[in-house]
Length: 219
Length: 323
Image 1 (tube, rainbow over the protein chains, first blue to last red):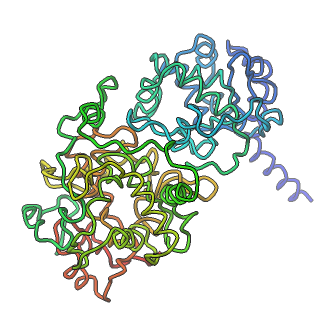
Image 2: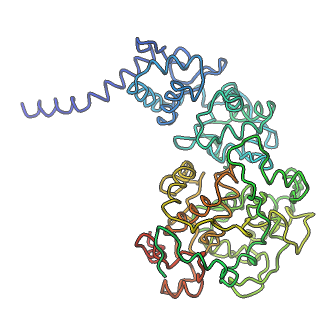
Image 3: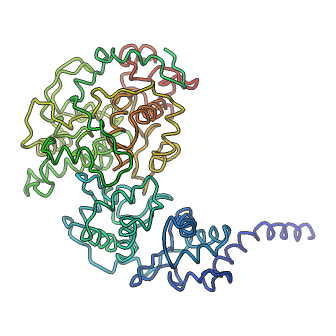
C-alpha cells in the first residue's frame, strides 16, 4: 500500500510542473499576470477565436513555436504593436511559452468553422492572388507557402483561413509599411510591397471566406 | 573517382561538359543569365525578369483566363492540373511526391525556370542523353521516368496528350526553333567562383532553404501532400534526373530560390547549396546496370554529377533506393 502511495505521489509530482504551467496560462488569459500583462481573453476571446470586428486574430490552434515567436517579437519590437508590446514585455519567458502552448492546444472555435462571407469567384482578384500569385512581380500564391486553403504549414507559415479579413489586411499593410518585420527571409515584406491596397483587400477577403478545414484547395 | 566533401576537386574539367553525356545545350536552350545583376534584398528594385519583360525581351504566355471553354480548353486545363499536382492527376506514372511545377514555377510559365513555352518550340530535338531524336512527348516521358521517379506514360495516354496540349496552348505566338530568352535555366556562362563546397553549402541551406524544405530536406506536407517538395531521399527525383546535375541545380537555385526571392543568393552560394543538395542519396537511376561505377561511367561521366563519387565517406548511388 505504501508503495502504491509512493508511486502515486511520484506520478503527481512528475505531472505537477506542466499542470501548474497550464493553470498559470489559463489564469493569465483570464486575469493577466499581475505584472502588467493584460488578460488575453479581453481581446482574443474566451475561446481564443479573436474578435473579428476589432481585427484581433484568432490564437486557438496556431503553432506553438509561431505564437511564442510573435510574443518575443512584440517584446523586442520586430513586430510593432502599441497594444501587444507592454503585455508581451511584461510576460516572462516561461509565461510566453506556457501561453503559446495553451492557445496551440485550444480547439478551433465553432463560430469559425463556417466562414462569415461567401467564397469569391475562382477568377476574382483575391482568388487568383491567393492560389496562383502574380509571378510577373515575383509574388507567389499565398497557399504555396501557407498550405491548401491557407490552413498553415509548420512554425513559420501560420494559418490564414479562420482569420478575419480585417486582421489579414492589417498585417499585409504592416509588412508593407515596415511596422512588422519579423518574417524569415523577408518573404512577406518583399511580396507585400508588390501589392496594391485593392489587391490586399481582395486577398484578405478570399482567406476570410475559406472553410475550415479546407476543401482540398491546390497549393 | 573520389571527391572530398570539402571541395569538388575536379572542377577544372568544367570545359569537358560540352562532351558529357547530358550536355546542357541539347537539354535546355542556353540563354543569357538574368542573374548577372543580382539585387541582394532591395525589395524596391525590379526583378531582372520583370525588366526583361518590360523591355519586351521575354515571351509572355497567354493569360490563363484566355483558356477557351469547350473540349479543347478542358484538355488544356487537365494538362495544367497534371502539371501543378502531378501525384493526384497522373498517379499511375509518378513514383515520388513531386509535381512538375516544383521545378517549373508558376505552372510552367516562369522565365528562367525552364518554362514550357521555352521548350515546346525546340522539339523534335536530338538528345545525347538517349542518343536519338526526341519528340516533345518523348521528352515528357523522360521527366516521368527520372524527375518523377516513375514510369513513362504512353505517348497517346490522356496524361501526355493533356500535358502537350497545355504546353502548345502556352506557346501560342512564340517563335519555334529559336532559343528564347528565359528558356531553360540560365546556366550559360554561370560558373562557380570557387569549386562548390559541401560545408559552405550546408550553411547556405540552413540559412535559406531549411525554412521551407525542412532541416532534413524532406519538405513539408499537409494532409499527405507536399506544400514544399523534398530535395533528396525516397520521395525526391532520382539519380537520372537533370536536377541531380550541379549546373542545372545551381542555375535553377540562383534564378528561382528562395521561393519568390530569386537572384538574391550569390553565385557561390547557389553552387555550394546545389552541391549540398546533390550530395545526398536519392532513388536509384533507373538505368542502373548493377554497378555504381559502371553506371557512372556510362551515364554520369561528368564533373556535374556526384553519382558514384564519395562524399563524406559515402559512395553516392550505393544505397540509392534502399529506403
